Each structure stands twice: as structure tokens, then as C-alpha cells.
Amino acid sequence: MASVQDIKRRVRSVQNTRKITRAMELVAAAKLRRAQARIEAMRPYAERMQELMVGVARASSSVRGLPLLQRRDVKTTAILPLTGDRGLAGAFNAQILREAFGLERRLRGENVDPRWLVAGKKGASTLRFRRYEVAKAWTGFSDSPRYADAQAIAHRIAELYSEQEVDRVVVIYNHFESALTQRVVAQEVLPIPESLLEGDDESSQALLGDFIYEPEPEQILERLLPVYLETELYRALLESAASEQGARMTAMRNASKNAGDLIESLTLQMNRARQAEITQEILEVVAGADALTA
Image (cartoon, rainbow, N blue to C red; front, side, top):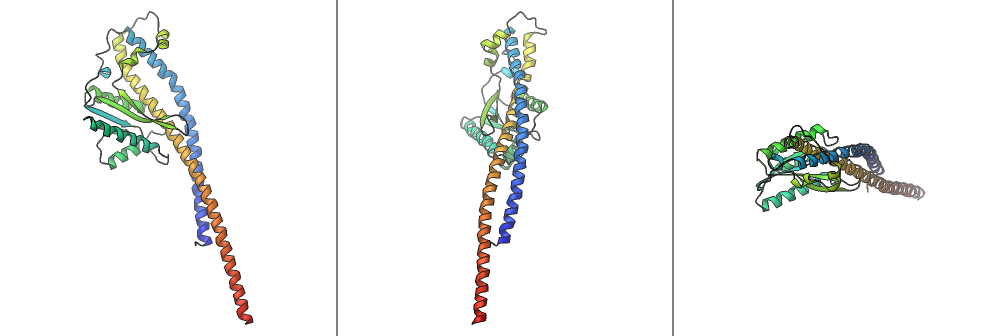
């Protein structure tokens, strides 16, 4: 049995760990609130962007010549997992990478070559550890992504697609449902589906009217499509950031609870050890007294 002093040291160590996990839980909760606010602020912009694209597409004579809309036989697919830069977030990173590796296996079974792009230090380090060739990695912004970060990613994947180095681009990320639930989503971002430009009845009604386009609608749509791609990637980065903070907050809360349970168990063990020491000392005193009187 461990001594009382050893158990006391373990209790102090676990108490210090619990202080850290509680602090990390509070920080993650504050970042989660900010991430949710950014998602809410971004939604009207994304909706208006899609409405504008629908209106311009309806005024265009043809949209089939636009590079980001062209569909071709899929021989190479770019896989882009959005992971975090740090750990201590439960299964946040693991479930994204698990989905990405599963997609890779399915592609190889269909004789499609996968090409790896990655956002986040955790994903980049895992891929390199497994000796995958990573065409491009973006790191340093998983906690608080900016629109410029989405622009950098969108510019690169649009370049790869336009130059026919890849025939499809799939982004894998955690969609934020709640602080307790994050759902893994594999979204095909390129080619941009033409069905997106058809819109629904509500968006069509919102853009009814006689508009004069300058320059031509096709040229406007050609400029709008890269912006739409940037917007979609920015939304995915915000969803991923909120999911990461929610997962980290939940993980740290569970860690704090487990630390509390461990402290209770160690305290009980320490009290038993102390009682055993006291009993042993009493027995030694009684034995000594018996020896003197003998």
C-alpha cells in the first residue's frame, strides 16, 4: 500500500490538473460563443450570395463554359480534411481523419487517385506520419479562421481544378450541431453543381424584375463563382472552429469530473492508509508496554 505522503502528492497533482482542465473548459466556452456569433453573422451573406448567383445565372445565355462548373470523368480527387491545430478536443480530429481515410479507400477501390490537401497541424502531422504526400497544408488558424484563410484555400483548389490536376474536390469537416454533438460532413465543393444555380421558388421570387447587367451576366457569374467557393470554405472553417471548441469544452468538462472522482477515491485511500498507520503505531506502543511489564 502507498504511504500517506505518496497519496497526498498524487491528490495535489490531480487537483492541479483539474484547475487546468476547468480553465480550458471556460476558455473553450468563451471561444465557442464567439464562433457561434460569427456563424450567425455569416449566414445572411451566404444566402444573399446564392440568391445573386441564381439571378445572374437565369439571365445568362449559357453557363457551361465556366471552368468551375465543368464536369469531367473523375480520375483524381482532392481530399481536404479540416482539422485542428491542437489536441485535447476528444474525438474531434480523429473522426475527421477516419472519414478521410475511409474516403481514400473507397476512391482507390473505384480506381480514382486521391490527392491530399489538409488544414490544421493535427491533420498534417498525421498524414506525414503515415507517409502520405501532402500537396499543400494550411495551419495556424483553426481556432479563429479569417476570410483571408478561406480565400487562400479556395484559390489553391480552384487553381488545381482549372488546370485539370484534380477532377473533384471534397472537403471533410465537423458540422456544428451543439456543444455535445458534431457531425462529420464530406462536401463536394468542386465542381460547383449547376443545380445550385437553379435556386428555389423563394430565391427566384426575390430576384424577379428587369435588370440591366454590366458587364454581361456570364462575366459576372464567372467572378461570382470563386467568391461563392470562398464563402463555402469560410462557412466550413467556421463550423469546424465551433465544433472544435464545443468538443474541447465537453472533453475538459469530462476530464474535470473524472479528476474529481479520482480525488475522492485517493482521499478515501489516504484516510485508510492514515488509519492503518495509527493502528500500527498503537500496536507498537502496546507491544512495547507489554515488553516492559514482562
